[in-house]
Image 1 (cartoon, rainbow, N blue to C red):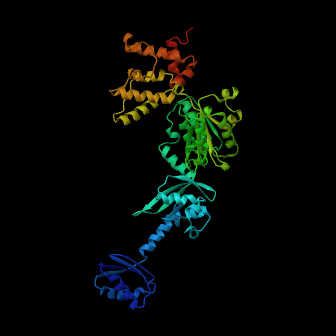
Image 2 (cartoon, helix red, strand yellow; image 1 turned 90 degrees about the vertical axis):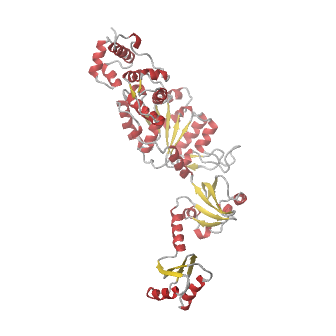
Length: 509
């Protein structure tokens, strides 16, 4: 039985309390003193004898109460600590001031292939096969930057947190696998990314894109996304990942056009210790290792060098690769989604892109429509960007005037959605009114082409509107040479477009 005694602290009171139990020939196997409490574990104490024992203890000066408890606090704390260590997914080791293991988590014991009792007392440098590691840790007071180590043939990033009293009394060491780091990186980079619900648009091309993307998302084969710059290819790639069986694993991206060849290689494949001057000590995992089980998105794949194309092809063939400067083959399970605004077929024809790699990447494909083919999605996106810009500026959201809406629909948008977002943001920044007019878009540098009769030359509102309609239809008809195609482009009725074409004599006879 276990009891808790509340007392007023004074010299010798704990000894007097234990003496009472000794007189009753009760064996005490555990005592924890934490004034004003003393906890005692006496297995031979009968619950029926507790009242008599309580009366005897209360005769001691300073003893206030005696109560039965189910467990000593120290025992409870050890049980909770063991449960916590067993639940930690990452291997954790506690070491003393000399660098020897004191406590190891269940995950650490499993990775090391040793029972926890065998791990206790091991030198941390010997455990990782790096004797100098212990000296490095202790010499620096266990303050050191993260580095890569190998335990039982597996690479880990080692993170050290010193336990400081007056001086370093040891440290807690946590080991992270590359995939766990990838999950954290994914959570930081993509915390606000959504699925297909984040792709705004109700035009027929966008509905068709979403339907096709939902089907290819569930497949494990490589996916190639084609589309002009600024159309949102990365957003599509992320939505496909979120709709795939890999949704709970990392989604990591590399822009092949944004980094030089040698850096792109180390970013994608990682590098071994001592690979080059300035390299992180202990090596570094690349995106393929960090994204194990998930997806790697290679944007602007058409800009990848011939050397990297060959290395990527080898990985796509069997899932294996070597780090830069490394000798060990590694295998990871990663789906590759790539994207480009260039014509890879033309690049294959002029031998600037490998034909075999093209066929490996182009197992599944999606084509993202340009903004100019999305009809009134332009206005839907514009209103969305207006609301976002207004929230950033902490002002009420504005609205588009008919003239501004017409100007947005008439523009060709060579920069697509990204250009539209920039235009709206600049217009909202420079406009003081509650509505955005066509003049605000011009002021923002949108480069809108003049449509219809200039306002200062129009005799009436009707003349200005007719001038704009005539100019718009004349510009669009050569690319959409029928009333039905033109109506689909402008997301309006076929009858209205047919009437307007007859009214303005389009096409000219």
